[in-house]
Amino acid sequence: MAFTPLLADLLAALRCLPGVGPKSSQRMAFHLLERDREGAKRLATALVAALDGVGQCSVCRMFAETHVCPTCADPRRDPASVCVVETPADVIAIEESGSFRGRYFVLMGRLSPLDGIGPEELGVPLLLKILGEGAVRELILATSATVEGEATAAWLATLARDAGVRPTRIAHGVPMGGELEYVDAGTLSHAIAARTAIGGDQAA
Image (cartoon, rainbow, N blue to C red):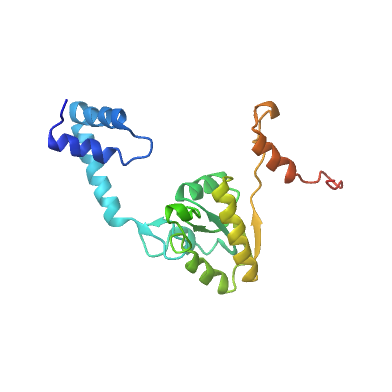
């Protein structure tokens, strides 16, 4: 069946969302048109407003509605510790854990030359400028445990050391409450390699 031009455009637009294919986009579009046209109007208005009003923090590249985001503007945050993450969602996850009171730098991706993602796309010139200002003492690399994420972390660690900043890597291992028989081999390998001492004992 051929869709009308407006409906075809809507279906195509919805497919830009991650994980949304032809059937999912059709289900979303039909729901909005059949049952929730007011919701569709709110969605359209909110999306346009966000596109117009949400940019990136000039310091950390997190989504922000001002030149500097609230986290970077907060004097209670420790400027000596900067956590590098791949996406804004990673910032939210760490903030919800309540375990970090430093500042962030959002790469908006990870190194992937085949996809055309290099230093410029990741904001590395800005990161180097921040490291060169002298306030940062530790660069925490919290990229994903993928091949690209590990390569990005290793490369950034070299840049940090060259700038006189101590690079550290977040641990990747067995999740809290996890049972070993259900943990994949890669995760177990990371967990064993990054083992820590208990009490006064030292890891072999």
